[in-house]
Amino acid sequence: MRVFVTVVDLGSQSAAADQLDLSRPVVSRYLAELEDWVGARLMHRTTRKLSLTAAGSEMLPRCRQMLELCNDMQSAVSEPDESPRGQLRLSVSSSFGQAQLADAVAEFVKRYPLVSIDMQMLDRTVNLVDERIDLAIRTSFELDPNLIARKLTLCRSVICASPAYLLEHAHPQHVHDLAEHNCLTHSYFGKSLWHFTEKGEPVSVAVQGNISANEATTLLRVTLAGAGVARLPSYQAGDYIRSGELIRLLPEAEPQQMNVYAVFASRKHMPSALRSLLDFLVLRFPEEPVWDIGL
Image 1 (cartoon, rainbow, N blue to C red):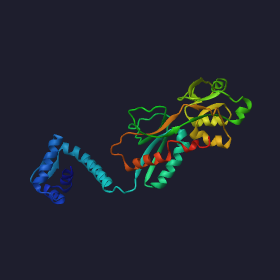
Image 2: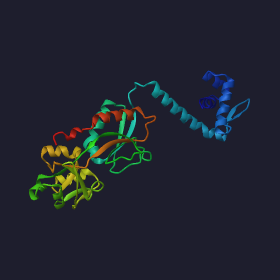
Image 3: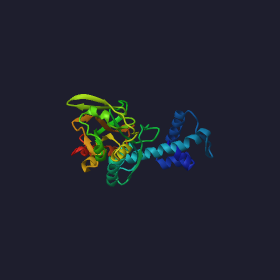
Image 4: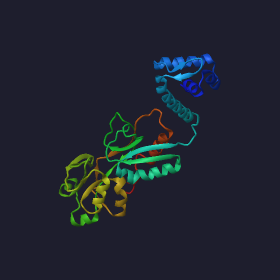
């Protein structure tokens, strides 16, 4: 392809041979091999000039693109110590993005200033390829085994309510007491049934309430406003519990845990920026999350 593009740019096979430090027969052979591979004649060859065929006109811009890609790959390999660069497009839930990932991304770009991050706060599962997502942060009970992912950390939940709500309603003493409370629920996780582990045994309780939402930040706001009892991720509710703005309930009952994963499309030809971000996030979010300290 490089021979073909050079011949077109310089207007002759002889000039291309000189430019590429090849013999004229080798240039002719490379052109013939490219035409055999494509299955079409690319150039009209006369003693006076060369001109492109229709197939050659179609191939030329594509060959240029391929050569640019090859140059990029060669640069990446030949300069392994070069700082990561380029844009990464991330997908993350609104709650985890605002509570945890935003600060992490800010620290990452300070460390790697040649990388830019486009954060998509989406409370739905995205198609990485169709939506051009380089990395998705997903919180799930069990990840699809067909996905490529690195586990980051645990996502624990806490049952909590505001002091104002608890002034008007009795503290639940057992998980089954939650059935008597106005429970604020997530549309996708435990909308009508909350699962716990209590004294090593699984326990479930049916819950109901007059507010549900499809993302945790809204549930946090209505819980702070005294609307009811909520099951919130500890990464989001922890600071409010430590400050006294929320009261943790039923600490002896452990709500069902989930995991936080970094999901990506392929392990092959991973850009250095994405590889660096993955390594950074693994260190930033260890197996035992720091946001659970003191809860």
